[in-house]
Length: 322
Image (cartoon, rainbow, N blue to C red):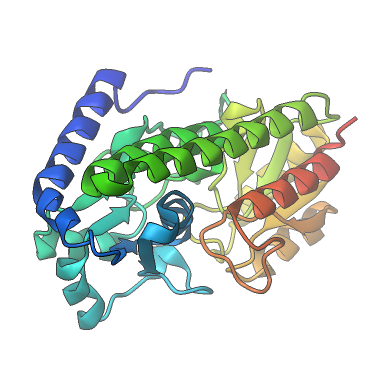
């Protein structure tokens, strides 16, 4: 697949090392404050970071998320209290490039005990290249992908990349709180094994399908599509509720016919209006493909692993898995 690598392996390793060094330098003294049994105060930017912190940190951390359940992460606005609380956190876990409000708040706080997980893996450009095919349009392009135009931040939707991130988070927690390093290491290994099993389930489940193309309102699945040989066709870009142009609907109609697409996917945290409009105009059905930016009562599962399994089931149905 001709996907442009935006961050080289060497650069990523260097950035990760610098990130962990900074985190360790400012947190080594903090770790001693928790020897009495107090838990590390961890602030996560949104659900995918919260899940990692809770699973890897276990009983040794107290995790709070800046993004409450049901809030669309891209549109998050922080209160002065939330911004002020960043200074007091023992560990801040975030993903740069997906929540401008969080990026700005962390920069303003000048807090050094932070870990940007984009330093733990490579980012790719899914602006015009999705699922390995060149589409010649930029509807997929996000409006704020950090400092590198086109860089797709949705790395958690690829179990392999998410596993790389999990390992980095585990190492950072070990250095921040060395007294409990063994537990963090054990919890990380357990999670990495679960993500490995999830990756195997996707590889096996999507190996033989009638079509490899799916349509989605939110173009969040570029990494997942690339990993499993699929093609994502986004209706719009970052805004799942954006109205598609007549030209785009016409283009999707052609794609649906040519690629034997059956389903238009929408998500749980946004209206299904756009998906229903496109489905009506193209004669397709609708279903949920959850970008896992938050867990609510509407989610098809209680955590990341369960919802990813639900996503796999939805993709298998839509793609005609054999």
